[in-house]
Length: 272
Image 1 (tube, rainbow, N blue to C red):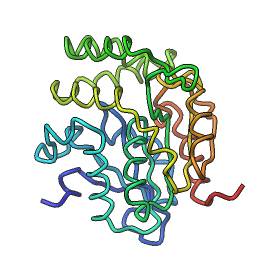
Image 2 (cartoon, rainbow, N blue to C red):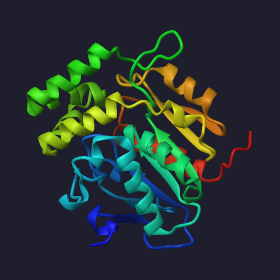
Image 3 (cartoon, rainbow, N blue to C red):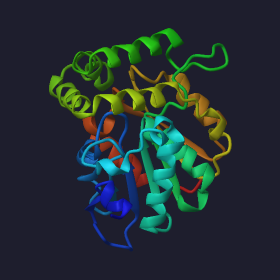
Image 4 (cartoon, rainbow, N blue to C red):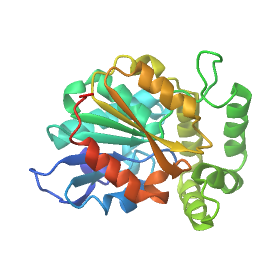
């Protein structure tokens, strides 16, 4: 079985059109490719390719390796292999949350596969190292978050989903995210959470040579504003956009704004 089939690859927008600008949309922790559907449906004049990470969504269980996927470089290996199999020049990779970190790792290794890189609600490191870096959390808080997941996935999902999604005036959004969290295999959920919240990819950021867009949300419970400023200072070729969208999943809560920013980004190659 090809990796494309294992990772449940599907296309939206101008599917199969090799002349269309092409976006590879990668979902974040505990979710699946359906998180991208609201935004992808609005990108009519682009080709959008979506997939499920190993251990998530409808990805074939054979794609998941219990050893390799304990760390983000294992996911970066999958991304590189998928992009090589797709063989699409000038591909625009868009990673949400931890998928932005995975994209950064892959782009440092194989920059030729990336036309551009977009990071949506990214955090290269969730851990505070004040005063140099504000990631938003102390180690005790992250350990408590992981411990809660290990002790009970359903209760953890019920508590965490509203915090992640924000937009409390639309509770259905958090309920949908809670459902996605609960669908994950419990053991995979814990291993992926550890890789997500305890990995520091800041060393890779300064090595990135790919034109990079950072889309930061307001009132994001997981990512403080200082993270966006840090990324802008440390990326070689970057553009920081502060979204009006709140919460950590703007492709769901405000898909119009996200789609617009991505479509505009395709024309940017680092010119100031």
